[in-house]
Image 1 (cartoon, one colour):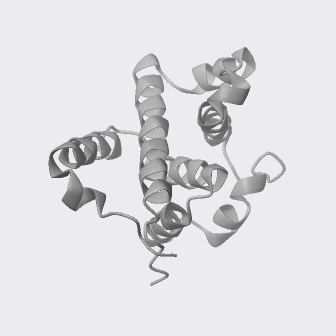
Image 2 (cartoon, rainbow, N blue to C red):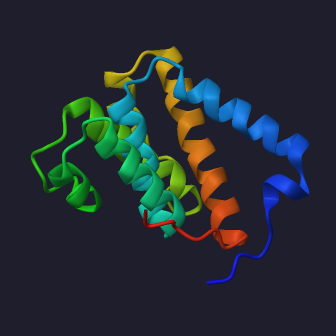
Image 3 (cartoon, helix red, strand yellow):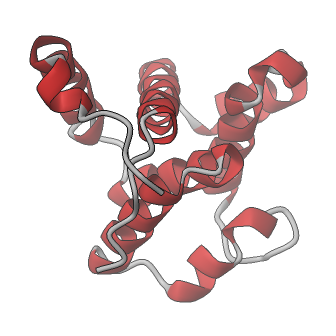
Length: 147
């Protein structure tokens, strides 16, 4: 796959803003493991090889187990995720597929039971951010390093 465009070189000002949002989300106080699970799951749904590669490597580096990463796309059937993580993953799926799901009340009730209002905003911005990165990486054909 041939990259289409270096988006950092083409529009450095807006990419700096995107990086600032990424930094704010990463340092928001949400658990690092939860952040990587959400990023990986959204990237799986969107089919973003570049981001799946990056975030599974980051998760492993930070101590995540390979079993939890291997089973992430079947998290509903795997007993490896906490209720808080399950709620976040359901919310991630609902918002990543928002055109189909319209953020169902059931998913909202679940995530609201496990996250404070402030955390709900942080989690939702995390989901929005990774979906934005996925669209940049897929649209401009960023290739995974595999390194």
